[in-house]
Image 1 (tube, rainbow, N blue to C red):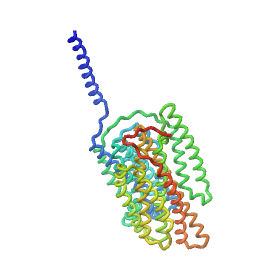
Image 2: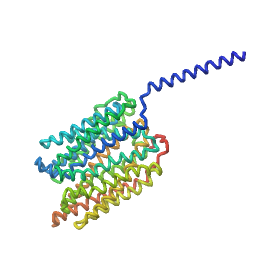
Image 3: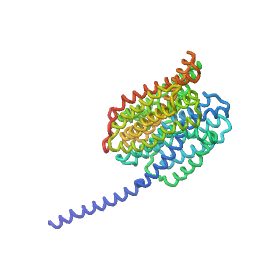
Image 4: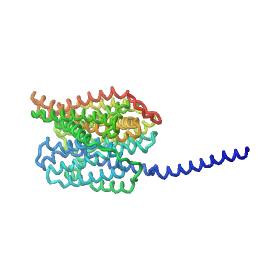
Length: 506
């Protein structure tokens, strides 16, 4: 009896083991192929290089605009749309990338982004008229808008928490350093070869990265037939497009035009309707174009505010400083580019180091001094005058760039790393969209402060170069005030646990 009983107990146990082994084998067969460490490193390397080339284009034309204006016989308000149109397209396209990342594979999106960028770059290099080059810039921006969230989401999905800071340090080189060194590279190329070569030299480099991506990127991870809400796309375009357009064209107010006010009103109303629709879709059908649940996470909210301030002051500085150097001090385009180079290089060198430090100590010990350096750099720049030496300007700019490096890596890591896995794509889309809005706002506000200050000085009898210097001081005072807001917010960033709980805390 006991033997039979023992036999009956053994058979089910053996069968259960067999069934378990079979189920495990079936699960392995059905699951998407998981990438190895080697493939993850290759994928991120390709995406970083692609994003670096693309994001350079956001500011690469800042010092080349006078040459473009001469060639196409257009004024400064028209020529600035080569930069503004780039940001505007980014702000419109990026909100849709949360849906794209669910619907398409990494390889699909990389291919689409590179094809768009290459097509736009080739068209820009041969553009015979201003409308053609503006169209080319819009096409370029479409590719850039896809690649940035793709890079962030790939990093968050496949890189272990313990090493994210290091990898995000490399990513921040792309997002914050590339726009800073864009004017430097542009100044060298324009001075030696002409503005068309700014695009011409990018074509073979982008083509090589494209081919490398086709070889190295694998189709990993599952996709799903995510619903696409057309009404949300329309509202998003009017909301983010309207706000960026209003901020970028704020100078028209000084000419008596109400276009910026109308555009801002349309953008704000559309944004309110867009947010309400996303909240409704989240509750009823889980088909929101841009899931807004990341804002329920404390670290995401705080980090986004500081990142927006950092991007606003950086892009504003990239626009204002060359104008001061050229028009206020009479420095050549090539020299202006070289003056901006040390700060960009320091930022590029320090960002990966900051990432490794973040992995050991968390965000606060880096973010708080970083915010102080950023604000201090802006206030120091507000003291420039007609006698400021180029060496002193380099020192001021380098302090600011060091602060940027200490902010961007830990803040992007802690903001997106605090989210649950299913919100990585939407969190990245939100972060990148708000960076574009902040960049447009920072450029508009600092340029407006500079214009108002210069006009007031000129009306008081100051010479044009001195008026430009005084206007520059006003612009960096505004930047310093923004930096103080970052200083106040920085202590509220919290360190993530080793394995995030991903619980949204109100």
